[in-house]
Image 1 (cartoon, one colour):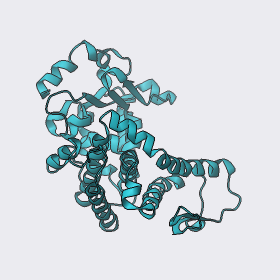
Image 2 (tube, one colour):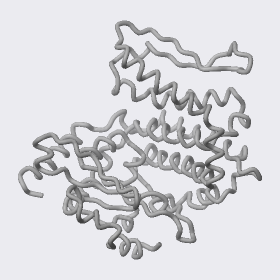
Image 3 (cartoon, helix red, strand yellow):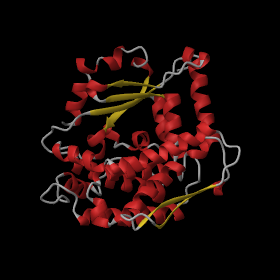
Image 4 (cartoon, rainbow, N blue to C red):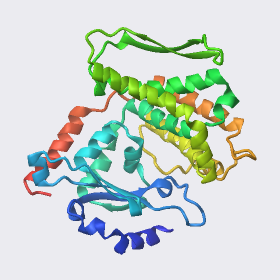
Length: 344
């Protein structure tokens, strides 16, 4: 679909909820394309799904009474509209599914309210080294989705490295989510294995005292789920192959790396991947699958090179460790104060 066709569709009855829902309507401050259209990876035959993403302001009574409206989802149209207070938190965490709304092509924004423009103008406030782990974490999820054959292609030792990398991306968020602990009290590393079928495996050194059991259980559960995900790869990958989704997962894995490179190297959010378009479409169209519809070794070699570049960027980026929360909070207070005063 062209932009004109998309706008006509969004103005139609299927999207009346944008105008009639109590949380949306005049409260919407930003509306744009999501998914393949926003990345420039939609199918040439026009059959790609249309995804919409947007932001709406929290209402005066929600702000003053601390009501917790966070987002509106319409599954039939793949539309998600985030509340302002919620999306600011997600953008500060460099959540890939949300931060991309700040870097669309100008023509891919269907509506921009002055407050929405303020968000776009201040998008740089949300960029930090958190992108290393948020994008790395999402990339690891995509790798697990595509990686049924990877363990055999790259070897068990490399498989353990992939698992540990995924765990480390999750581990990065633990200090914010759970009771604090000394940095060196939990150590994860790979060493020679004593198991018959393993060359190496992941080990843990733990030294925690007077630590809440429930917080430890939650941390362990997150790490355990990542390990279990890798053991389920075969079944999940079979389903993806049968439904033609494996190459799409592979494409998104590569796309996530390149978007993260722009953030770390250039401090820019660039959602539409014009430079990598041909590569991404080759991946989506199956160039990196073998006759059994499985990823070929060249694909994993490409991913290894991307991972090396990410590691280099992580060590050399000029971005701060965390976003400028002082300026972000001042911006949030300014917007919410204007809502309460009836100025918006």
